Amino acid sequence: MTFYERLNKETEVMRKELYSVPQLMDGLKGNISRETYIAYLTQAFHHVRHTVRFLMAMGVHLPESKKWLHDAIAEYIEEEKGHEEWILNDISAAGGDKERARNATPNLETQVLVAYNYDYIARKNPVGFLGMVFMLESTSIQIANNGADALKAKLNLPQTAFTYLYSHGALDIEHMKFFEQLVNRITDPADQAAIIEVAQNAFRLFANVLRSIPHVQEIRHAA
Image (cartoon, rainbow, N blue to C red; front, side):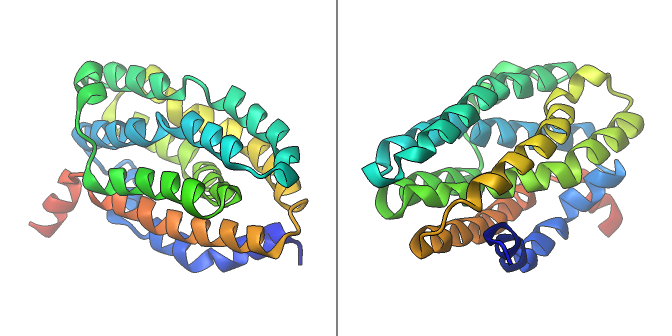
């Protein structure tokens, strides 16, 4: 079993927990309101805006023996720059106020996800951040395009309201091939354990982010 295969196996339970969140399940069917979609994008903005900063912090904290990872970090940074602005533009295209979203206080669950990654990078093992990368990119592949197609049809929103989801659905397929090759080069047991730990916790924390989003459709079902 390669390390990438092991990573998939050891995060399976947490991944299933994420995919069982009502906001996500209904979103994949298009059964959420426009307000819920905008609320999701707002929280996405407030963690995605840190992605480049996470990667830079990871590079800064890497020991000399791990500097071979710098090229991969640089490539990720180049790919991820500006994605938070895509999200704000999607909010605007969906009828929301992107400046209000930009200046909003993120939900506590989103703040915890962000803080956890900064803390792990600085205090424990910067290589562990690749676990967060795994969670984000593997999740995007599974949900992005399907969710965008369903929501566009049900909410009658323009293609321009789904730039972030559609771009990640396509981009992250290539990203995951790159990621698989990258993590399979990591042989240090401590680094492997760190990546698995962060990935497991990132799935849990991201599930909490989704649960924190007001979900009008869920309320209607309950009524």
